[in-house]
Amino acid sequence: MNKKSTSPKTGLAAIFSICAVMYSAYVGPGFASGTQTVSYFLNKGWIGVFIGPLIAGILCFVFNLLLFEINRVYKPNTYREAYNQIYKNKGLQAFFGTFKELQVIVVVLIALSAQISTTAILLNSMFGVPKIVGTVLFCSAVLLLALWGADLLRKVGTVLGLAILVICAYVAVICLGNAWAPAMEFVQSRVSFTEFGFSAPQAWFSMLMIVVFFMNGYEACVPASKGIIRTRKDVFCESLITALLCSVSTMIFTVIFAAGMPGVLEEQIPTLWAINNLSNAGMISKVLYVIFAIAAMLSSSVAFIFTVCNRFEPLIEKVWTRSSGFSRKLVIAMIFILICTFGSTFGLLNIIKYGYGTFTTIVGPVMLVPLIISVPYRLWKDRKDGILTENYELVEKGE
Image (cartoon, rainbow, N blue to C red):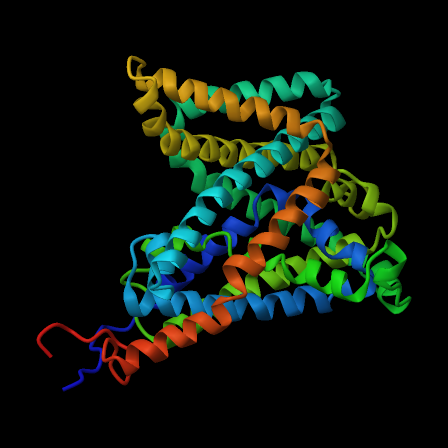
């Protein structure tokens, strides 16, 4: 006999905590600098101000529904376990597992290169620090903290994430009023994506694939959502709140940056441009923005290096048998930092345009788009095979 779920209801605060993880993974240094938002939306013309973020938010809602339903039903412990539940074929499991490993490496290389470049630009713009000096200082701090102070930095990571959210909210408050009128002029001008060299399919595909970044926090939320996402109502609430947070905050900044079109496309740090041109903020506000932005990037960069060190250190140990764990991690960290330092020389605008753009172009269709068919099929098939009840709950042993 099938049993209905008797799990107690989850409070909205607990569900919101999952949404906060999803949102903070998106609103990181790339969003805070503004370069990511400008690159994905503003160069697509007037449709990038409201329509693009809105439809990306709808896609975010759909993919959250699909993936968190998998979390609710099967209760996986890791991202890989979640995909193994969706794709039961061993070949597909091996493909998605390998693809995920490559995805992590590519994310580290692209994101760390962007953060090194952004830090150098901010220090140079605000304090006149030569870019090479800013690069060396930031990379040295990342290396030291990743090898000796990672525990401390992870403890304050939540605080830094909250700080960057506060800064983004502050920028919105002080800039949105002055940005509204010129932004509406840009929207009413109906400037097309063709003015910026895009065809219709290219423009829409580019904008909508930012959903990859909207979903950046899912991996961390797989174990975090256990015991919290218990019912389909919980899945719906989490999906709706996350989609609204990501799309609405993006829309606020597309409005702000639209006020500077088309010149803002050439700005390396559009948010700093907005503070300088659309607000009456004094030097203290600008310095605080720079400090918090760099702190967030430092926290994120250390987490990246810590992740790859933990992933590859056991593999190197098999070859470099007489080395210490510290030596192996030092070599790994140095290799990644040197590669990313070289990558940062391509310039922030190019890293975002080509690096992030290529990344989402590949990851979106491979990891997200197939879910629209594969998740409903898996749920239907498992229900048909008696693995799930009529209410889409796992059948307990002995039933």
